[in-house]
Length: 555
Image (cartoon, rainbow, N blue to C red; front, side):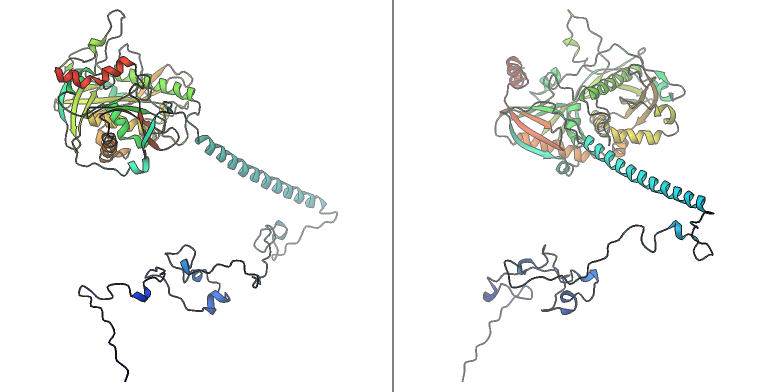
């Protein structure tokens, strides 16, 4: 008798089914399938063979979702087979001509079935026949005009698309000896978040603030106020040139910046034009600066995020930018009360000592400075110089700090004079969309400084062709949190972007180095370059930057 061999039994104590792949199936290729896949027959003569049923929903009946070609690795490919030939037995379809068909409207058949007849081509109806032919010619010419109009619209759309694809110039020329360390695309930056950032600690308060004139809140298009020029000077001092930051660098913090630099980085995903920030790393401390000849921070952009740009000429855009910057400067000073008491902080303005006695200069504008420190985790202590523009008294006699900015109408259509009072919501929504990056920076500056309100002025030209004479049409008040919600600005995402960039600089092995953050002029990308230490500065300035922490430590 033959021996009876018991089959091998696999015991699975933790579940059911086999624990490993059987030896005979170990090296066999396997096509994955999903539970929703239909398992077909060996030979399907009803649907796939003769196409008896032309139901399109059965075309991919046996196609797996894991296969891009329909059969995956078991597909058959016809290659160099001369014995078989595909014969097309399908009858060619009749071409379809417009105007020949049962459903096509034909004026010759109008009225058939109701006793109407074709126009008689005799002498009696010769005039009617000619008149009908003339109408037919008009219809044909009308169709030709419509086709030409459609082609013109297509060409116009094509030209508009090409106009939007403008090759812009970078804010700084990239040198050959600069090494690109990393790059950040905007879709990736928009997913970053750093929630639950603690409240800042005020280290130093300096400067003087004047009170806001409440009568500007009652300005409208019927009682407008002319914009006047005021001779005051607003200092634009970068981080390493700030004497207070030099003093704090030895005691507290390891990352130093100004509010405009942080605001540019935190909402960088809204930017379109190119800008750059210089980051200097000295003995574990990072200083974020702007270049001396950089206009990205001192000048305001106009309609940067609009669907259709104002112009593609850089010189014309600079003219719009200069006008907007001048309007914003004059508005922030005109709405202040020049007479009366002022709100003074503990320390005087830190930039008063920089005035040169030999050359007379305009007096400094009243600005309040607050130096705050945030703990961003991962041993990052951020020190920032924040600004306030004015103060005001509330109904409860409480002091409110204000951030004052102005928007100007640049398109020469004078819509604000006509619609700002009745349709203010639509105009404000349009400006929030067309200037998303600029307003986002203003909102972040107010958020970092701790301003209670943002006073946003709407200024337009008196004459559409005169770019020097303006008038104030309206002043709108916003809370920074409400304005951020209106423009979909997430503060957690802003902190996450800033933290990611600081971590990238901290990961560099050198204790002392200089880096450049550059917004690509034609792409939604920020690039990080490693640059030489003497870039953008003279030898004296470079040596001075390297000794900033050492001088403060000696003090």
